[in-house]
Image 1: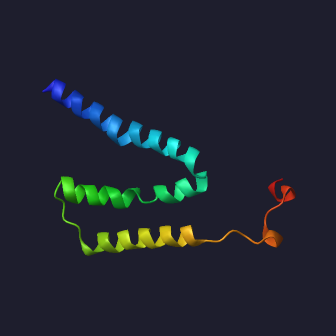
Image 2: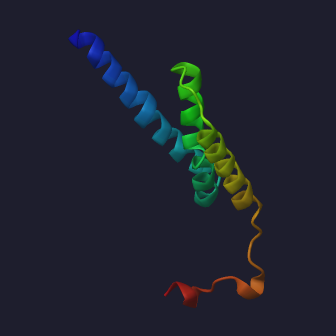
Length: 95
């Protein structure tokens, strides 16, 4: 009873909270914070896929459409080009 519940809580806290945040922070060291934020938007897609695989949840049309929109947004954000030098923000813009 109680021991099994505690094991579930500890597993969830490590696997669903501590591990992802730790990996995200490690990842930021290897890529820029902006790129890491773009990549982290895939989390809902992974969550739905894991729910289908592990919990045998049915994925409906809306979930497929949502997943496609997430992937499209990631690809769109990933393909953005840097601003030309004439439009780049300056130190005065930050003030």
